[in-house]
Image (tube, rainbow, N blue to C red; front, top):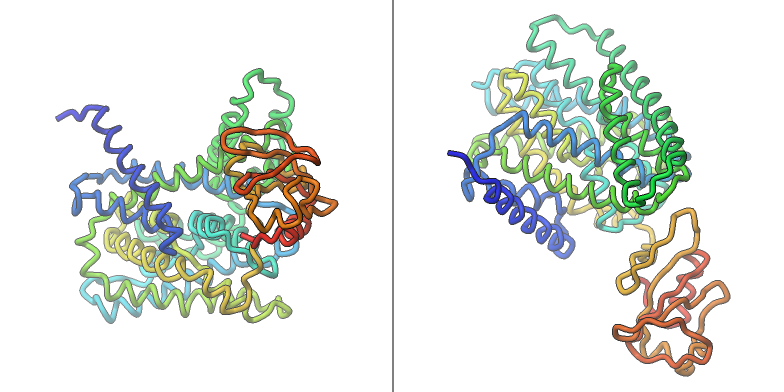
Length: 498
């Protein structure tokens, strides 16, 4: 039976709408939006509403495309000035940390499954493959949760976590592919060759991402396109080119596309702000598509038999293997506080990447592939539920939650400035307290570094003067030199920081 395209589009639109509503509800419930996206997919699948989606290759394609866009967008939003002080720690966590996590987790899985599901006959190499599948911190989860929750962290922890999660996938990818080849070919493990492959791919990806990122900026600034709306599409084109070209020079593209985004995002180019906004929305769209498709792919009935061992594995990774790997990897950095290392250990989020790697295993028809996929999926759910919901709480307990900066998002004024302009914009609702010294603009207690740009009264906008009379509930657009000046403005006007 041929399904009409209109029915497919109707179904997709309903799923998207439900997922967006779930994402909005996540902020109030304190649950990661990605977890709710997965839940919508699972409820819509074969064990729920009845949508049958079992195409492994399509799911693999969607996941690969989505991950490349998410990593590129994460690179665009990451400022090199922020990650420069913690590059060494981030790189070590993304390489040695991943290797140690895969090793410790694999050994623990081998023991746990031998105790709980002896009939499965999981060997040591297969257990190490399962450990490698879940060894990397998921960039989509980290970027999404840290940024959507507006979590401000002390001691450069946020850029360190984003750097680690954005650059550790290649290490996990190489481990997974190498172990798959060992299992399917039945060959004896060649550890020196595997180590050499890891170093080679990391080098290829880093160099390709840097050079192609620089070339992309040069081309963007040299091209003269009459239609300004095409510039974000041009940046998207370079994102896809960097990822795919790296594959053909024997890289895997994931690190390359992140480095390329990092280079482009920290360079000056035409219509940069519109391109960044475009990728922010595109990354969220593909996160939604990816988690929906992964949710549709799983059969919840198959999760029931493996709940006990998978739960033990999940908790072991959260409380044993991830902390052990982090503390061992960061031993050279003795000045780093214990609480910082503890929080880094807690942000070992699993998400879409482990599930995508598990799809690789399904596509390769590795023995016990479906068992591996179900365990990875269950561990991802536990990680998002336990770690994802508690990131702000743990940060406060450890004294690492910094004072949140005032929001830069404008609701009533559709105005935006480039990040290269260091000024900060905000909008203020006039209250009785704001007018305590009088209702004229000149009576407002605005610091010297703050300028009132525009007033919105109802549906009417106008530029204020010193003798402009203000009313309660007027919306005032202000621009200041920096966040400190904005905080001083809030304090002078009796407004609590958001």
